[in-house]
Amino acid sequence: MSNNNITFILHKPQLSENIGACARAMKNFNFKKMIVVDPKPIYPNDKILATSVGAKDVINKSKNFYNLQSALKNVDIVIATSSRFRNKNVKHIQLEDLKGINFKKKIAFLFGSEASGLSNNEISYSNYTLQIPTNPKFKSLNLSHSLIVIAYYVSSILKTKTKKFDKSKKIKTASKKEIFKMSNLCIKNLEEINFFKPKEKKPIMLENLRNIFYRMDLSSKETRILSGVFASLGKKR
Image (cartoon, rainbow, N blue to C red; front, side, top):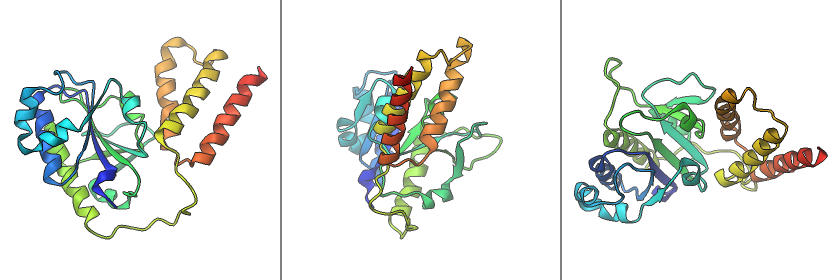
């Protein structure tokens, strides 16, 4: 297992100081991969670099994406952080449950903006939601504080023996890019038969579909089979 399999994604961060502090927190525990999605400030800027202190290399090597879907293309498992329980069919985990995650895969920890966190739509791209245990009467954590808690905990896991998975080595887990392609094909066919109605319910219907596809632990072969099924159904019409 390697720290290089771990990516920290900041979705729509609002303050330069927080971005810099996150980079510093990552480097404290030897994590190097940062992705910033649609940041409010110009990225990077002098204030970000200044607050990152000795972690300017993390900022300089980071990637900047316009939307979340593009940022997740090369990720196997997405763990979204949230201070509140979501009434969604997605597995909610605590810090100690991270010991059961297969860190040989490409893992991304997703953090929302300082003002509003992650929406249900953004949560729908995740495999798990993670809550950090805090004071029930004051749950909100600063962005960089949330990140450093998780970075410390994951770092301690990687330094110890973790649970072995029994899945055959011949089975290749589907990448997010493969799942995107499959789900987009399904959605395209559904749109052609006017499935999403009434129109005002389409966003929540798409959100629920993503919850289904991204939560399933599909292999590359299974994803290709489903893509073939969706393509064939489209041709039948």
